[in-house]
Amino acid sequence: MTCSCNVCGNALETPIYASAEDSSITTMNILVPGRTRVFLCGHCGHLQTAELQDAVDYYANVYAINLTSDDDDQLYQIVDGRPVYRADHQAQVLLSKLDLFDGCRILDYGCAKAPTLKKVAARAPQVRPFLFDVTDKYQAFWRKFPGVAGWACHQTDPAWAGTMDVVLSFYALEHIPALQDAVANIKALLKPGGIFYFIVPNVQRSPSDFVVADHVNHFTEASLHYLLGAQGFDHIEVDARAHDAAYVVTARLGPGASGKPVMPAPGAIARLDAAAREMSEYWSGVAGRIQAFERSQPAGATSAIYGAGFFGNFIAATLASMSHVACFVDRNAHLQGRQCLDREVVAPAALPADVGYLYVGLNPRISREAIRAIAEWHDRQLDIFYL
Image 1: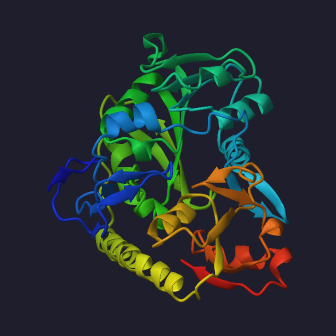
Image 2 (image 1 turned 180 degrees about the horizontal axis):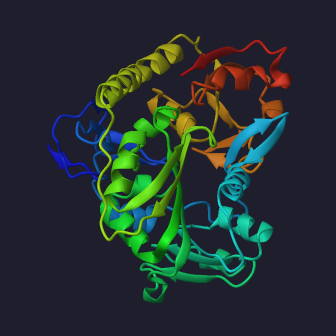
């Protein structure tokens, strides 16, 4: 089955990765039918996953950022034993990169609860915030937004065309198959010289992004420059350091009506191909390793899964049985006390005494350090599996 690259339109024929099972897992930790198939575009360097079988229904009826809390509860990292949440970090980075002058019109495109812009507006009350999402599920949160915010659902307000100084997007573009149309819509909202500022996952630093089924776009620095240049943006900065496992991208809308794609540097496609094949080999073998660890446990043993996010749910979906799993463990206080796959999410200190086996569902780059940092487990005898 062939598809077309969302960035340049090039035909994509042979996947570089295909999942073994005829089901896939989404960012909502939901199993959906169909194999995950990932392609690499040899023209612009974009990595792309085949679209969900029923994407319209999924985004209309299934996909939703947590609707039960006013706060952004996504843990970014632990610093000196204290949790830092993602919206706080994103707001800090944004304020360090952009000059938000008095009266600056700033739109969060695909905003959900708009937690980052909410924090920015609280710290920079001189801005004029605007909110947009394709669903009306979040209006209750928008009504509590600091200051007077304009908003629109389903379609952006026609009166906004050409009036925005800044358009923001946080972890939205990876979900959008009609990517060129989305960026063209954002371009139409900006004033000449306006800034498009967005964050997307960095697949080479975030292994889960490679196989999550509802992320159709896995951006690379090459494909980001190609996409934005083709749409008429200049002064493009792709920052891979300011945010862990993500790209923070800043681009200015140039003076011309049209743009010119920025072609990948010599050798870039070959390097991306090698990296993508390495990720493919990793995910092709990880299910077997999980199941081998499960088989190694004696009858009657009790286990737990550390991490109630994508990695933890991927482990749970791969196990032959969940009967031996007592709970999920997570340091995110917002998740503790909730249920994940009918198991309670507990703090590390509350890990039941009879748990002897632990599956660690964290990014492999940080997993060992994260487990070593849990002081409450230093005297525990745990047999630990790392992805």
